[in-house]
Image 1: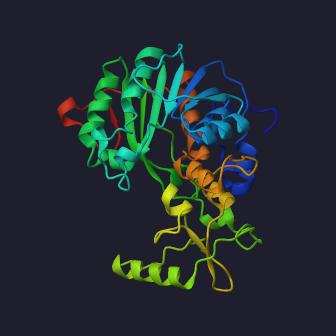
Image 2: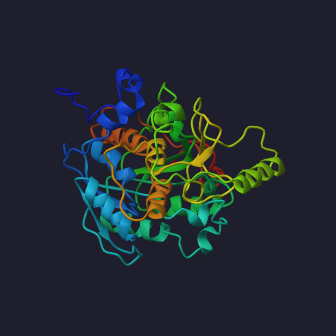
Length: 356
């Protein structure tokens, strides 16, 4: 890609069609080519930041988890600060704010307690936008925010709109942006001007086999093979849940959603690969990272469990790269199409794209 401007466009068809592993290892490389400052809140291990830095932005992360902070700072141009974010946290002016407020309050596994959950990070996110006054911001969160907690989502977006932003949001699937994983997430973007466009879907759908087929038959240090009792437990679970297709990793399609729980723990819905000799084992750190579109050079810090949690919580960097490219098109005004709100506050449709 030498000699070409890769910062003001999406991926070319040639880049989309290249070998998946080659693509993530070559395309996802931090580089500084933009002047805008990016504040990355609840930054985790830096999946969102890697996508933005690969598009030419430099980031500053803020994250409470020590291992995440180390991973972020060791792999990216920007650094991460270990900070617990609250409504009282102070910020300098920022051109862009990105982040993933803690999603446990809105996830099915997290019991969807939403507003009443002490882990709710949205008040701190809203306060950051009010204080830093960015030109454009975005947050990513679990799909549960659009269902049981859709009233709270409307409250959050109302408060952000009142700060002077046009807001676009939609339930997006990472598999539509080159990630070999079915991963639905709510993405909301706020802009000062009304011409932002979400990234267009990729024409290429990646499979789990494209991501990990070269890894699953390699010798693995300390492999976590499933025992006979675990196989029996999973079989009972799949019968009870009327599961028609075993939940092994199927190489001919995108993987199921990766979460902290299903890659770190030996649970009934764990991600596992089936080997040629019939044995099954849990996925490795590198296999999980590939399925999340982390390049092979990206190293995670901390214990094995901590690394799995960092991967499961991350925004897939390739998905983040597509979002970063849409930010560039907005900032450079290369894709302007004035958009007029066609719904009132009371008529908001929380499934599908809405702009106001």
